Image (cartoon, rainbow, N blue to C red):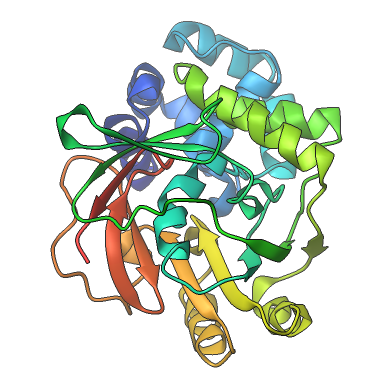
Amino acid sequence: MDDLARRYELFGQVEAIGYRPLTEGITRDTTMLGRIAALPEAKQQPNLLFAAVRYLGGPTASYPAFAAFVAGRWPEVRATMLARSTQTNEAARCAVLLPALGLLDGPLALVEVGASAGLCLYPDRYGYRYTLPGGREHLVGPPEGAFTCAVDGPAPLPGRTPEVVWRAGVDLNPLDVRDPDTVAWLRALIWPWQPERLAHLERAIAVAEREPPPLVRGDLNDTVEELVAAAPQGATVVVYHTAVMPYLSQAERERFATTVRGLPCHWLANEGPARMPWARMPQPPPSGRAVMVLVLDGRPLAYAGPHGQSLSWFA
């Protein structure tokens, strides 16, 4: 219970400050902690609980109202948490992937593992607005609805989006954005005080609806080799993932790393630094805020905001 309370406390302090009134209330509420602790460990995530309440139409602005809703409808909240997972599928993370993809010779064949609804399979379909020190901007692709990313350091910002000739994804539970209920869940995962992320989601859904991504249901360790082999000859194959490693055990992460290193492809990862022990960081991550590390073929390139909102290039 103490570990669970600390997990919720850190989530509100570091990752999602807007949920801090809820996380502080939960840490003092032994009844609420008991409900959460009775769930399987993988289903105890703060964001899963808050998204389940929002999906069911519950309040998240104040703890008393939130706690009353959970107490009154716990069977529904519990069932939603057991049936769903935090497949946020943050398409704006393409903004931090793009400079790394620009380092590779095209055309590209993309293989995303842990693809969720496949919204990150379209880095060539989005626009990007990189804000630089001194108020300068660097635009890539169409400016309308572009993802905004604050950049510092010598990031190799490309002049155009990459040429992608083939794309495919794999997920244990691939999501179809043509299903209204799936879209409702994806919306519930967006934090309510971040309307720009919701706008990003809606734009990415529109792209995926026009061109549904080819998604395979399966375990990434069992399918990545087959997907790489299916890519067209002459294309540069890139296997990539964002915020997937926390859902794998240490043994599964090590197996994946061993497998992908032996495949004829580049490997691009955007993960929490603690989940990438094989990548030696040239400098420690910034303290007091959540970051991810961008790693290409084992070489750390930059620290990135969890939702693609920032990029600190150090390579």
